[in-house]
Length: 560
Image (cartoon, rainbow, N blue to C red; front, side):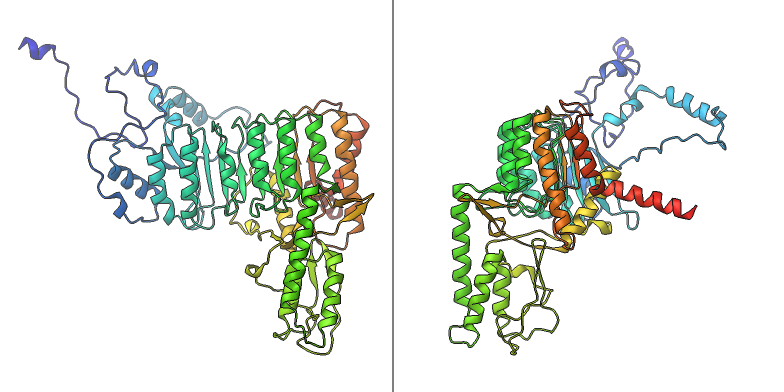
């Protein structure tokens, strides 16, 4: 009896709560829980039981059900809970109709919240999978995981769950302890997701090998990529710059890239600028809160205006021109009455910088009847004049229809994918200004989806050197809080002046017009310096946000 009396009372068994990690087994009193219990970041080890055929599980399309069932089959006893992402409360705006003093109910609610147990205060830190749902059918639109380690086996479970999420648009992983190995596993499961997945955010996940560039491979479908707070240095920037474009490859799907709050310096900014030389798909780039000084700023500003081609780029340009000419000759009839006319037209178009895709399509019209009145072709912001008809419906110089199959693109052509995020299928970018800029930029890109290879763009010859038009596709550049002085500021002023002059001369065109938004605030120069003031004056009429404000003010003024 003495032994029984000394034994503590046995607690009734209780099923573990989903979303709560078990402790190491030590039993603590309720009063000591707040002092001893800490939110753990690693899932408990898997039990020794054999998995219950996880490979044979067929997803239901409900993430909460599928994830729980697969975790159980894999042997996990405690696992994160799938919850709806909490929405921020709207800011309180005092008005005459509301009382300044809190009501009795508000005081009672505040008192009850302050008296909550210590356990409830740690709910925010417990591992969860937050989801954002579509308002119509409650399907998962975005996934947020933050603050707990995502292991390779958990990614294996996700690979089974994500297949059935047909409306998934974004995956956000914040401080989940990714490694270069788990990143490779994560990239491998992305093709299994729905084609609606366009945004990936990996923030607060520094990697030793900085292999983030694998997310920007040539076959990647990611349109929006955020890599903030990952300690990316100049070496990582070099890999990312090469992923944007090289002499022989180019990323054609990435629309926005956020590299803020990293350790990128002048050398890294130069690598990013090199990637922008031949990239014609990136619209939005943030390098805010880095370590870029004047040398890096000069490199970035250089690609925004006409720049000199290197020797290797000139050689590659000549190779592409020869390849294009041989393709056109092989497709052109040698005994046709219009052969000489076709050859003359090709030589003329070659000088104008028309892509080989347009010429190949014109040759194809020899056997295809073309509707009348559809002989215009838009290329890189310039409208090619309507070609003359030669009297025969099979003439190689006859115009092609506007609607063309994008899968028939030939070599030497860069395609910017059509964006449909403005219809509600895309992901939110966070701020009103960012959304406005991206929506307008995607509309501009949608106007001219067929772009020539940058090396085949019209060039200018000066003093024995070849100069190519600068990157006018990039619309948003954020260099907030770097270390740029007035020296780098002057380079950006020259670039902005060139783009402003170019946009005026090509006002009738619907092609790329250059930067619409440029942030250089909080750098190492006075906000009152003349160069910075001039840049602001030049950018103000181009900024879509300021345009919207002026329209609203004009509407209000006219209505009053």
